[in-house]
Length: 90
Image (cartoon, rainbow, N blue to C red; front, side, top):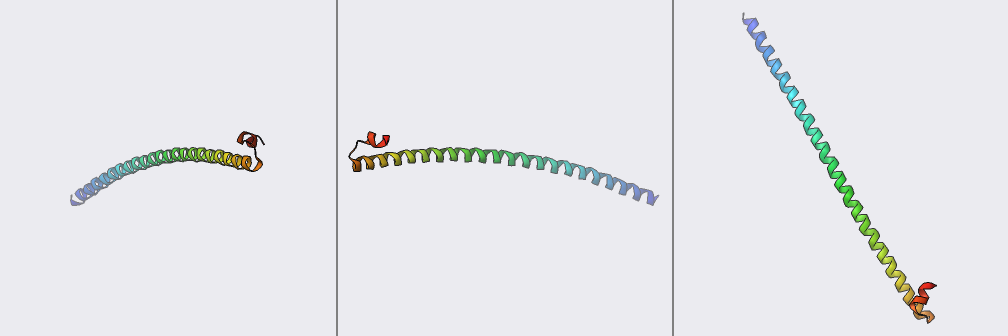
């Protein structure tokens, strides 16, 4: 009788551990899925920020190039005795 009670108690403990383990697996899977979704969202946000920064840099570079062209035309006009419009046409 004692052995039967001991076996029954051991079986009950094993079943509760199996159920607990399954719940833990489900929880871990949910946590992993959530972390993957967060990582994906963060990567998309970082990509958007980098694209915006690249566009700002490109606009700044174009503005600097235009300023350099205007300065070069001004110097050429002064050296050649031309107007800036004539210097830019060269």
